[in-house]
Image 1 (spheres, rainbow, N blue to C red):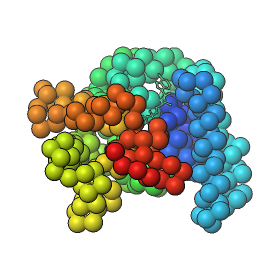
Image 2: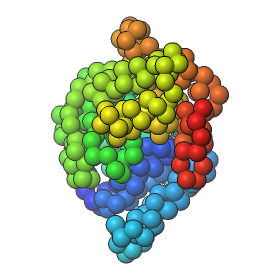
Image 3: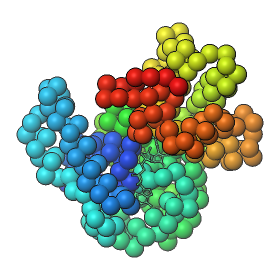
Length: 296
Ligand code: NAI
């Protein structure tokens, strides 16, 4: 399997929260980056967001303006999957739904070169199950970034049942070359972080549902006394309530609906109401341009 070098093209499919962050990481590592999203116009919008973030890095003196200009010329929104034909690596960051991911990868396999590495950013789904539809599942791997991808160093490199050693090695090397801290793990529900983190969210939501304390109080307690950088309510607003709930359901189902991982009713109501967190302007908290402005 060929290595992915700085001159290789990286394709990011799904240009929401994570796709934008991963695209920024690949772009600043020197790659040509193609962006594709199923919703027309969203890839171009994501490209503008990524470039806006690079502008802010230049303003803060953390990125050279010549590098920003070069990055701008390497970022290419794509109108169709067929435009990803020169990718050496595809990182998928679409909706957390195994059937939708399978369909995408089955289509991608007929578009990209034979030696292209295929990676999913899934938080919790079985890498093995998504790969099952592929002709060549040995080149498929989990490459799980954390939010915000440009800032958080950890990347879980997940080997499914059929993932070849060459693909896992390559994914690990790419993450390391991008300045990340990759760790290897096998394909268990939620991998390491999202399994261990489930009770962090679930127990906090239960405390709130029992009206023992408000989200702001629980967040403050965990931040200020617990030493966490963010409390569970503000963190799930950043992640996206829809995404976080889908991950909980996936882990819960994988463990035979063990009550330990049961989804929260209050979070379900947020998702049903379209209150998905920062990306929709409101979740547990309400957001304005300056950040959190109100509480539920
Ligand atoms: P998001 O909802 O912000 O973005 C998903 C994007 O994928 C949307 O723009 C949507 O139009 C697009 N999309 C959906 N179906 C598609 C398809 N069939 N083909 C192409 N584009 C499609 O979601 P987010 O938060 O970026 O999550 C993406 C993936 O990353 C999920 O698997 C999630 O579990 C995982 N993840 C999310 C994290 C988070 O904190 N939000 C952290 C780490 C992983």
